[in-house]
Image 1 (cartoon, rainbow, N blue to C red):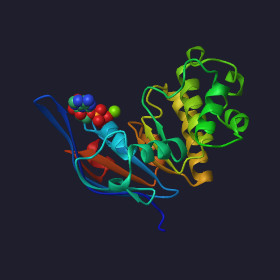
Image 2 (cartoon, rainbow, N blue to C red; image 1 turned 90 degrees about the vertical axis):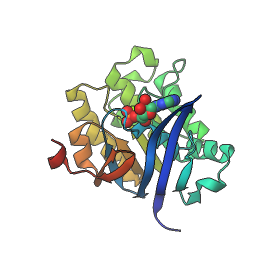
Image 3 (cartoon, protein in one colour; image 1 turned 30 degrees about the vertical axis):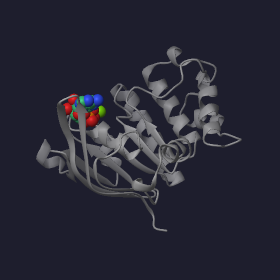
Image 4 (spheres, rainbow, N blue to C red; image 1 turned 60 degrees about the vertical axis):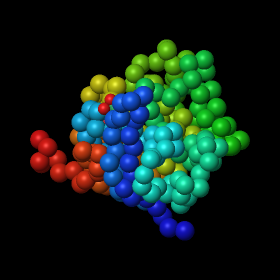
Length: 228
Ligand SMILES: Nc1ncnc2c1ncn2[C@@H]1O[C@H](COP(=O)(O)OP(=O)(O)O)[C@@H](O)[C@H]1O
Ligand SMILES: [Mg+2]
């Protein structure tokens, strides 16, 4: 058993809409270890969200090799992927992951329950993320920053091994992003979670162990000096 959470080699993904083909991923190779945070940057439309959805099994790559949490994608059924997403892989989608009919507290408990955890550390997480006062509120009664932090609390409550975050500070104003970023990293580091973080936020990217750019369908080391 090695420490790799993700190992990918030559992953390809093309959307097909009738006769139209959109080749988005064209040979993505990289790995992510336990406890490691990797930033992914790239222009809008370069395929960052597509990549995260290939890595969590919502989309199936048409070519290439993928191992997630030590298991080959070739051997994973839809049920296996669903189980991985419930228990071990938390995806923070761009538009938030909260269930609108549940309060923040119930959202957190629900996610922990889906992961098979009888108890949850929701109160501590909310305290930590500075949203304890929102416990009884519904998602539409929260500010963008509070919603984002509630989604983070849900992700951590399931005690995942891997977090795939799609622009986790994308809908936050600068000051709130500044506050959320350290909290995010503290929780990742403390729990030795592996994190792949799609971001346009330079400060978030700087805190990661490595930065990769998705360019022309492939991942390459990102040199911020070149892109500015
Ligand atoms: N369901 C879809 N059908 C066809 N093309 C799509 C679909 N979803 C995304 N795309 C296209 O794939 C490309 C990559 O999209 P996406 O992964 O969302 O990029 P990013 O997250 O980097 O902005 C874009 O050109 C987008 O228009
Ligand atoms: Mg996207």
